[in-house]
Image 1 (cartoon, rainbow, N blue to C red):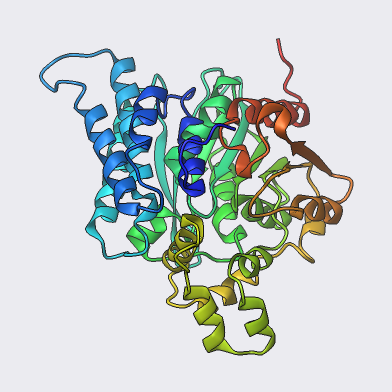
Image 2 (cartoon, rainbow, N blue to C red; image 1 turned 120 degrees about the horizontal axis):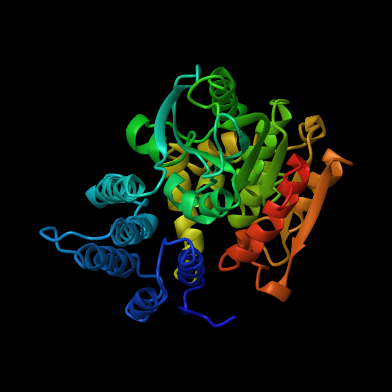
Amino acid sequence: MLQLSEDSSFHFEAIRSLGITRANGSDIGETLAILDKIKPKDFEDWYREWHNLALRVQSSIDGSKSYSPVTLRDVYFRASHYFYVADFYTHGSPEDPRGKESYELWRKYFDMANAHLPIPGQHVTLDSGHGFKIPVILWRAPQASATNPRPTLILGGGFDSCMEELYNTFGIPALERGYNVTIYEGPGQPTLLREQGVGFIHDWEKAVTPIVDYILAHKSDNLAFMDTTKVGLLGWSLGGYFAARAAAFEPRLAAVICIDGVWDFGETFLQSFDGTGEALEKRDIEAFNRCYETIPTSTSSQRRWIRDHMKYSFQQSSGHGIYQIVKKMTLEGIADKIKMPAFVAEAVADQFFAGQPACVVAEIGANATLFKFDETHAAETHVHAGALTYLNQEIMEWYAGIVGDKHE
């Protein structure tokens, strides 16, 4: 694939951003125009160029003039996404005010775009019953009504995504196919970090079951457009673990979709930080933390970013503290409890979870479908960045088969 940056992490994130062009989240020319201005490994360059791009997009409309709702929606969605991307590498300094500003701006412009949709999404905040609140946005599909209730997909992100990105990634493709969409964030994800100070947890059913409860509680009134017997759950990236974990304890789901299959996040952690495995065997906490913190100058931006974002998203000050949570993020002894149909994707060149989807499928058993995405459709990398049209083609057609959705 053509490299958009000498920095492999910057290249991946740029491809990830370009991938939502079809769904109004970005545009090609304006993105490509800034990439050669960003020096490899320079997080300050990254922030500045993406932030300024967001400002330019926002300034392309004049507040004193009247515009089509479509124009406003497209501008606001792109500005929102670019503010989100600008924030991506700032988490090494949680006190940096730019992080809070970026969060507020991407939320502000997303909500402005949402307000100009033919059927805007509705915000709801749910009490988990476990010391945190769950932000949810619900969209009704155009075809759905109380007399024609339609299937619903609950969409959740992973280690570094947000609700707004999920709307462009999977929400629009699902709505176009006549499926209602519910998007949420849980512990360790932007809303709970910025507004509640709650880091990642391993027992993700605490974030999902309250959403299913809410849908079922309102199936006769404001959510009558949802067919509550056909509610699926999709998890993206580390969300592949979250979705599978939640599905193991939530039998009311009709299907679970893991993009991609994650068997053991603790294994990924130890592989990402050289020497931590040996330190763990010796029970040397100080050595473990040194291995976690050490970032040689020759190391990629990716490792530095993972270290910084882990501290931030787990709300922990040390690598060993993070690992006490991460080691519980395994589907061993859990996946066999998943009894509904499961779609487990595999990126054949995944840089984080190589080989893990097959383990997930083997543990789930006959209910699971393993789908390998490879170079044939340029979908071989982690979460199939840049190949979202093909990704949605496969998962949405599979889901249609599960919920008996006939194409007419």
